[in-house]
Length: 280
Image 1 (spheres, helix red, strand yellow):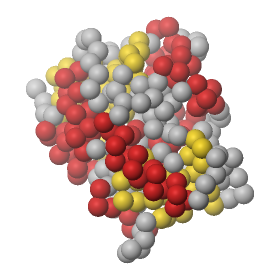
Image 2 (spheres, one colour; image 1 turned 90 degrees about the vertical axis):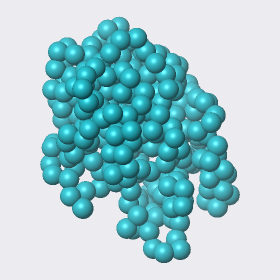
Image 3 (cartoon, one colour; image 1 turned 135 degrees about the horizontal axis):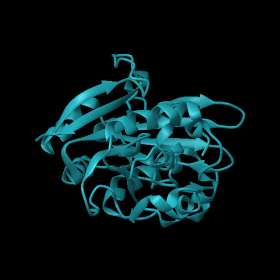
């Protein structure tokens, strides 16, 4: 799906199992419904990535460019070394397929059978294993040198408990000294004036994007108006909060960059790539 470069849109452009499309309605009506859905989705394991979304998911967009995929795969291949990799939210294989071409054995977990079916259509996908399930809790056989969760997908888990469970699940799959990599936005709350809920991040003739924040619950609903209205709910999460989740799961932070190019993470960074290592 093609929604621009703002970090808060990237989870929608990547593997978001909570995308729901509907005709245009008022933002207030839609947001009230989405807030209620956001509060309950974590306990409802429903596949929102069905045939319609899967059919258009691989349409050309910035997240499918060589400039984005190349550095991502380079880092992941280096971390995997001669070991295997586990992708959480494998989807249609945007990262898994080129990583497997680098010689890394890849297994993925995804809630959507339709997305995995699209993965299966791609050359080289026969070498990639896939398990249908919720990546916060689903177990697969074997251990892995690397687990990764890219493109804001950690925010698809809409409660803190689910995000903590994801870290614990990853730790159970990693071999000693193995790595867990997350690529996610830094919450953009500095753009939110006191008393406001809505922050427009993209306004053009073809797309209007508005982020809606529920600060008390760390909720984020990203509204996208194109020829349809998509309003997927997320739970935004701070870098320090992720570090605490990692500690709970027995993982230690090793690196944090502003992007896959390994640039320095600073107070002005709008996203981060973080690498934790499973303790011995």
